[in-house]
Every structure is written in C-alpha cells, then in structure tokens.
Length: 257
Image (cartoon, rainbow, N blue to C red; front, side):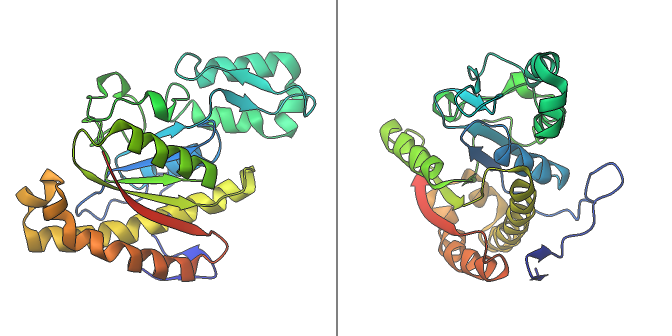
C-alpha cells in the first residue's frame, strides 16, 4: 500500500473511529511498550479500529506514569489496577496538572479499550483469554496466540525476546517480533500508531496471498512449514515500510512461542 511522507493511504476512519473492513485474512497482533499506557495502547486502538485481532502488554516491573516531579512518579502494579481507577485517582490528585500533561486524556482513551494494564511476562500464551471478551480487538484473539508482536522501544523488544527464549518454545509456533522505535510522548505515539497500522496492513496483505496459495487449513495451523513462504517475505515488507516511515526505525526477528 502506498504512503507518502509518513502518511498512510489506509481508508479514512468512520465517524465512530472504526475503519471500514475490506475483508480478507486477518493476522493477530500484540503491541508492547513499557507500561501498557501510551504507545502500545495507541497502536492497540488503531489496530482494533481497523478490525484486527489485537492484545497489548507492558514489559516493566511496574506501571509508571509522570507525577508532580520527575522523582515522584505515579506507580501502579500490572494486572490489578484498572485504567478507570487510575484516571479517577489522578483526577482527584490534581485535575489541572494531569489534564495539562495529557495523562487524563490518555487514560480516558485507555479505559475505552480494555480494563487495565497487563504485563507481558505474566501472559500465558495459548491460554484462552475468556475474561477479555469486552476488550477492543478481542474478536479473533480469544485463543491467546498472535502472529506478530510489535514493540515500541528497543528495551521492550529485548525483554520480549529474552522472555520468549526463557519460555522454551512450548508451542513450537513461529512469531514475528518487530520493534518500531517510538518516543514516549503523546504526539509521537499517534504517529507511531499510524505507522504500525500501515505495517499491519502490508503484513496482512502478504499473509492473505500466501494463505490462498498454501491453503487456509494448513496456514491457520501456524506451523513453521505452513508459514515459511510468508515468513520469508516479512524482511522485505519491513524494508519497504521503512522507506515510507524513515523516522520510525524498525528491528525484526523471528522468534517462537
């Protein structure tokens, strides 16, 4: 798909934020940043609006958000605190500050996407995500397995790769892990979300073509043999995408669930 000067040519979203679904095979995506708050959630929403199955996580030990000073961050545990409760707490602490720095707007978006921040290292791959049925992008991701993981920072990419190696590939299923380096601010997250959606569209187009060649039944198994022709195309797809989005440096590897 064409894009000029970092602007995607994807169809304009409808008034409700949803993009018209052109149909066709849909790869399953996972977006990852440090705290599952800004970059991963912007990308999560963009992909969900485009009708992709998508889940998201953070790789940090705790959820960290800016506080009144650089030495006073707001810190929360993963998996236990909702976006709504964080929103209400910060709104009560200092409505003016957290409106001005964009945190309330970000959390307001997040609580419309899913319940709360999740930690990558706690994700049980392959276990059905039945309690996430109300999440945006949950349709198609219920099985707890994805085809592509997109991280938003190199240290998050490293953490994902290390964790996958430690898990020992129990499913013996290939997964593409791509880092798209995005600065952790609201403006860059928005641009990064557009770029990630463009990349997802390009990957899905190739996957649809290879699935038609290999056969849906074989391709959907997700084995290395059935996905080999698609896997071989991914580096070239990322290279073409990188030319369209030169300000979003990308790194890729093929890993295993």
